[in-house]
Amino acid sequence: MKKNIKKVLLIFPPVVCSQESPKQIMPPLGISYLGAYLEPDYDVRLLDAAIEGYNHEQRVSPGFFQYGLKSEEIKQRIAEFSPDVVGVSCLYSSQFPAVANICRLAKEVSAEIITIIGGTHPSFLPQECLEYEDIDFIILGEGELPTKGLLNNISNGTSYEKLDGIAFRSYSGVVINPQKKMIEDIDTLPYPARHLLPMEKYFRIGLPMGLISRKTPAINIITSRGCSFECSFCSSSHFWGRRYRSRSVENILGEMHELKKMGIRELKFFDDNLTLDKPRAKALFKAMIEHKFNFSWNTPNGIAAQTLDVELLSLMKDSGCYEITLAIESGDEQILREVLKKPIDLARTQETAKLIKKIGMDTYGFFIIGFPQETKKQIYKTLRFMDQIKLDRISLFIANPLPGTEIYDICKSKKYLTQQVTGQALDYFSSSFETPEFSSVFLEKIRRRWYWGYNLKLLLRNPFKFFRNYSIFIFKRPLFILRVLIKKLIMPSVTYGRSKATDQ
Image (tube, helix red, strand yellow):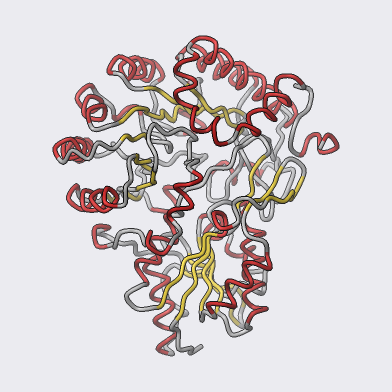
């Protein structure tokens, strides 16, 4: 294949959301980094269909809705730019139908447009995704090197068949070339191409991941890639690699200076392992203090509790951190050790939570129930630990088998899956599999009861802190709050998702 590629359109698709989950919106870092990487060689445009069509919602399945641009609007945007290549991000499995639809729309504009998709879902299910004839190529894993290599080879008319990190159809069938090489020094990456996105729209809506902000406008930032852990429910180490690659403090400060000039007042660190390299983390927070950025910040993706100590926590507080998210997941040591393979000591985590509060920051915790090897007794143990540790707020999720994880392979081998993952609206409030130990209805009921009971206790125990944390969200989404309160507290018999679709 030879094609003179000049114009590239990168699209973040509409988002599928549970009726239990409020809409959250932040600039998509994936296409922002890729756009910045390609911009020196190509005319690049970014289209975030989620923000551009934020107010348009449509029901896609029982208990789920999609927000973002309508199909005809996406098609019009493609036609207006007339790109040679359309690349579509597929961050979540629930987005895949929208991603496939965008590729179809691109081919309707012109059969000559090359369609490429990337992200976690297609990286782990390339064979299934390439059954859709409108998808030409899949980028596997970290996107910058394979995408640029593919575009350059097509432009030069040289073979791409042995390129690292791509999948495509050939005469002999689907070819999958695993990614072997990743960017060694991520300081060499340009800062995300935020100038190609409608930043004022994100600022105006102001509902970031995690829902809370102390200051606005807030922006997401990431300072590292890769994860040295290999938790069975998470695909991060498979997607970004197990080697931890971090940006230098100087490189991060350069981006922070740019963000300060943009008027940013709060940062959301999206790292999987912000504090894994403790000397780097301490140097970063010291530098943030010295430069007097006065950012407020938190960690909505979570932090490994075992990396935290008094000195590090004090520096985090002094540099503007107001909340630390502890990704605890389970309150059962056996589940943590043997099933999740997550290196957490629960007793130490409790002490760390107390220390965080003592230093003056809030605590937010992630908990998950319903793993395929879990018993009801172990589920209740997690719920009791969640009560016992007394965090300032929590999120309680139901385990779901994300492609690229060991949990997915277990559920598939044991035939636990009740639905096909490709094209399914996966979320963390309903269950897509059942085991001999528990049903999806049991998980959904117990999650709802404990989650809302916990948050009601938080409201009663410290109403000032509750309204301080959620004041921006309550102000911006009062109808969502009212609807949830009615359906979850006044009418608790109504459930969402596959188990009671007739109630919708």
